[in-house]
Length: 283
Image 1: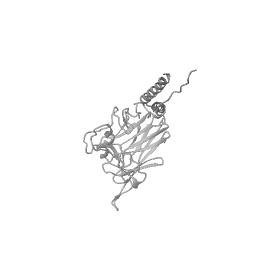
Image 2: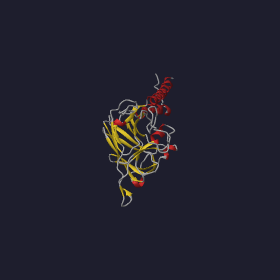
Image 3: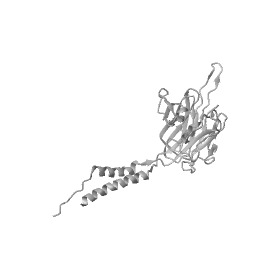
Image 4: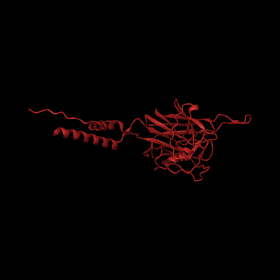
């Protein structure tokens, strides 16, 4: 009479098998993104000529290539739309793969707004912050010797194919002004600092939800889970010199693509663990 033996699954084998199963659902990366770099032909201190993110550069909190460059002039009262995109494809917003996205953009940075280039970047991430746009300022009151409220800097993006996405707004400011960025009902407050990206901390997230809790030295705000084919971004000066914008990034989050390399490794380990258990049982 044969004795029935039941295999003993060791903790290590159980862990590897569960890890392999988890890899199928947990290992994911963003499928697509659209990056927009607001550059300028106007230099202030750098004197190196226009600098923008090149198509082959990988930059951003979510690293991507093929950033769209909107090259603003040195004039004031900056506004425009998709037709002002100068590259990688003129007049077209492309996605991170370089393919036409179909998305459209329009922007109005207010009266007296201007482009600024303050330093020569040393890497691709620095390029996002080397050039930025300063918003305008309000009308001057000669009776009180003060400026009126600064106009809102506005960006409208439409015709997006993503159902759900995250929006990253990048900013830089040598004067450390306090400003806010708003999409829908969500607003973040921050005091931008031009020296953060230069000194090796290019990505500091703004998390303040009131002017009193403004994040010091922030370089970007993140709006997660935005839905719909369009959205409006409003940037307002709270105190200081001017509100700014350097770049923005729209990252698809509804269709995550599995990270196949990590998944295959974990699946292989899990399979090896199960085989070892089977061999032990066969003895």
